[in-house]
Image 1 (cartoon, rainbow, N blue to C red):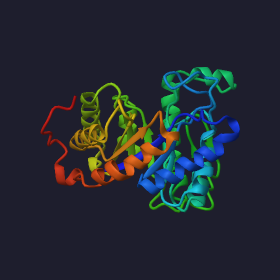
Image 2: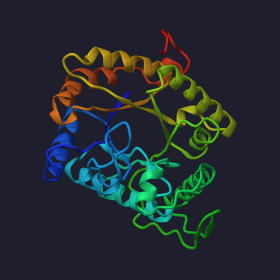
Image 3: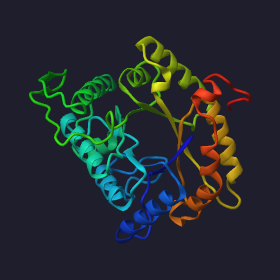
Image 4: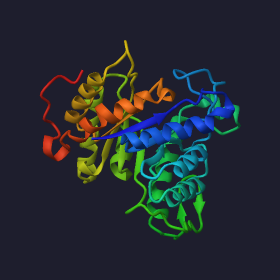
Length: 308
């Protein structure tokens, strides 16, 4: 199983300290063996993480900086709200990140949900049905632009007269397309139809993750795609510290995720700036995760203990 690190907050050392802190964390995560690093694509801090006035970096600028201070980890947003940028420009941005990082970009995308920041910065915020249709249009365009198809494309919202994307991505066959969200009727169907990865929250409970994975499997069957084509990722919060969670707590969590069919467990950490939790991961968690059997070995439905 791969292990990823999400950075949802940047409230350390004041504005002048963000740059150095981000570099310190990136270096430590790469040294610890993390496979990926992720930032949110938000412009205001979100409820549940902090007040909206907390520092928040623009996602792709932050990823470009991380690309410059790392050499191995994959990089992506978890995930980009499709309404924030024109689709062709968004895909050009992701491709640029892939080229400058040496082929390490993910394209994380979803329908978006944060009306407050959209209204605050003057971004139109249509209803959920339109946002989902815009998401599908962007996913269709990605299939073209990532593969060099410059033919005219007319979507429901935009006309792309010549979707030229040069230089092409370095990732083969293209930057993995991660569709974020667990909506069972639409989002997971789009992941099965267009995606290379999905992302699920563990917060509602691991029984919910098990159910969502099963829904994704059924959508893959309906689309005629092998379920194994989709990398299943999860997002969790972990606080490895005295009196909080232990490395064995995290290893136990990973063992259950593995049996549920999860390939890539992504964590955020409230004490990440301390660096020591990353070092603990490198010594005691990342090596154990690498030993977990993959989906083919374990069998997608082979659950030996309760998921919750």
